[in-house]
Image 1 (cartoon, protein in one colour):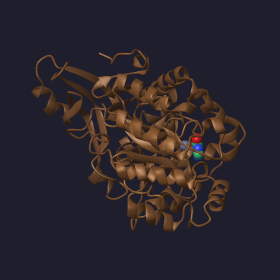
Image 2 (cartoon, helix red, strand yellow; image 1 turned 30 degrees about the vertical axis):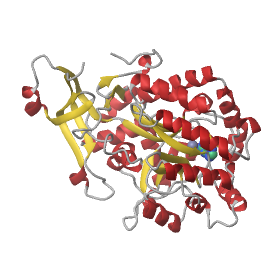
Image 3 (cartoon, rainbow, N blue to C red; image 1 turned 180 degrees about the vertical axis):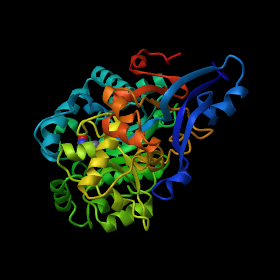
Image 4 (cartoon, rainbow, N blue to C red; image 1 turned 60 degrees about the vertical axis):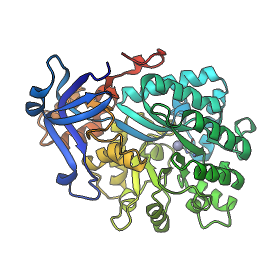
Length: 445
Ligand code: GUN
Ligand code: ZN
């Protein structure tokens, strides 16, 4: 109830800064046997159990997870909720994959009942995997946004979403037009943005499916509502990059198409960015534009290897987060996505340590999305969105972690071997919530 104090006890892991900017000892917190104190959905205090427990009111409920890691809930900065059911589509790279698999799946969302059912499945998958915030594409249908925000509100989950804008190079029944796309986005934004935990993202699919007029309208809408997000795709696949050059011959490159239309800046986030150059990274750095690294998707579609270390170059670091990009991505698990990011770095001859990948999955994503004032760390005042990870969740994990030398090694094992089985519990605003709580129509008690 209101004002009630509860607590979660376990081995706390979180960040106070970025391990890409400062030494790990200065920004990574590992508190063995720590306690998180929660009131009215927010973290009020964290500290060692020995210090915190004696000060709690008599009878305070303490959820104790001995031997488990407790951290801020995972954030997925790029995913497509309407593609939940079409994951693992065989055989094609990006453009054929869109035409043969994705567009037909999204067309089925014309049925509002289907959109609600898909939203429930999607939110259940997020919770099963310890993901407490996602920025997701909906579809071109305005009701696809209503369905998702309504279901997310019922479990008090922070979702950033928007209606897809596309007015060309896609089937007619999946296209809007610049004026209609603008008006529907504006109306959705007015209806949902800032209502509960919902946040709106202006969502042009990608440059090939929006006319210059539509991109201009999207830029106008953002100028009129600068507190919302912009969410799109960028430089994922080499054929796509060549196509954008043909479609926008006057622009210096792919990112310049978005920049020219007023779609770069803080709270603009682009998925992939696999095929970007030094000038692009400079522009991202200078404008605050963020990139979501989606390694399982980039491997699945054969898109390429994201140059993470180049993006984070200390001379002009770019905001980077991690995304699953389901249905091109092959898992909702952010742990598995961290594991795949490690492999992609290996293929580029670089090493991604597990502390940095955990940062990307939590506070790094929150910073990339400009929501680090409210989620992404175990900071007093932050919303109590939490994930509890069990390093002994499977026989192989138990075998691998029983003599782990450090919490870093446990995190690495979890990222390589873990998935939803390693997620013991997920908390939204201080309440334990799971897939079984989605779609019941009332907030869990
Ligand atoms: N580019 C444009 N649309 C999409 C999409 O739905 N998924 C991915 N991975 N890339 C895209
Ligand atoms: Zn995507």
